Length: 267
Image (cartoon, rainbow, N blue to C red; front, side):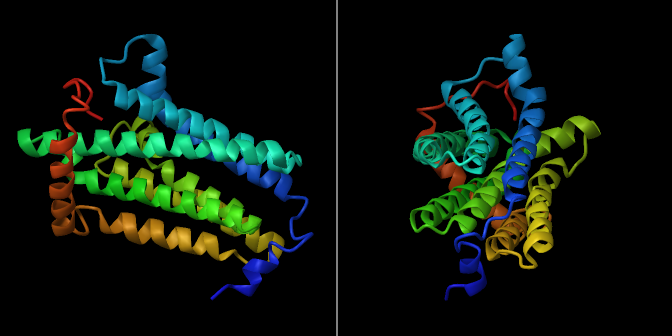
């Protein structure tokens, strides 16, 4: 059943003047956090020529991630300045970026989990492989939902679902930022992925202040992030984590002919 108040946000004139700066600013904050996190472990070493040898799938994943989070704030600016035609054209092209991000991410993850199951390490893949998978699945799911909202002219839902998808997809970058700033924390990865709920929280606060109503897309996204990703933590559900690892390992055996990871690249 459709939420009438959510549809009201898509009515003519429903956008506020503040939307023109809030959504671009939030998009810049999300993307900037991701770039900061990966600058320490990937982009910086790549540009400095110190990154160890790695296969093409890992680099395809890294640079498609970079282009997606470059496109995300640009899209928010374009819609805020009324350049809808260019926004829609770039939005269609984003499907390719998301497909590359997701498929290469699944490839690298499954092969790494299979290698860890076979050799006994690195332990991070056995502990958090299913958690990373849940992050990837949620990102794709909310991105697809956002596209559907755009196709049915429900633009308020589209904007907020894109915020949710991009916030969730930021998990690996946010985790790396926490790792860099804290030196090391045993829960750095789940802290980073679950911490992305802070960006959804900013959207909730903005809706509450400007509209006195929070769009259901935010509540659904926040619940999915906390419940789905939380359930894939070894501290919460060790049996489920082991079961998903077995599935990832079987997939990794099949895909291992495509990607042979270098032993020097652990995470």
